[in-house]
Length: 170
Image 1 (spheres, one colour):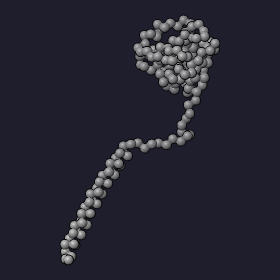
Image 2 (cartoon, rainbow, N blue to C red):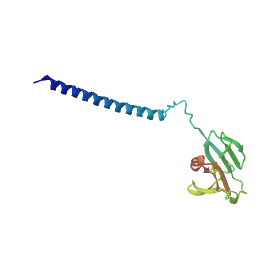
Image 3 (cartoon, one colour):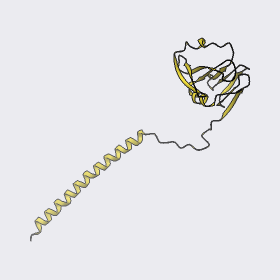
């Protein structure tokens, strides 16, 4: 047997393996570049330590005259308290929670608001009126244990807190 054809076939097989390996390397490099682009777009997750997270604390407000109590975030500042009403503001100076149990309250005062929403207070559905900017909800609620109406106005983000913690006393 002659060595020429065997040598030629060996060289062709080695060349074919080299070309296939080179093409495979190009594909791996392209995939690697695509992965780098994706990783550069995605933000890296930040790790928060326990000392960085400030726990939210809550306080309880109780009005003996209006015979009600509710829980509010301690970050809210009580700016006005009287026997018949109280007003709490947030750090921006916006009224976060306001209540009034003045016996002269009339429902017509708030019905000019644009939209309504239903809240669940003490196993009763209560209609709440949204203001024109859709930032606050106002509701009139007949006091279950006393004669009169209570008006509560609060920012929409405090809705779950008011629904779950507003309690009426005797």
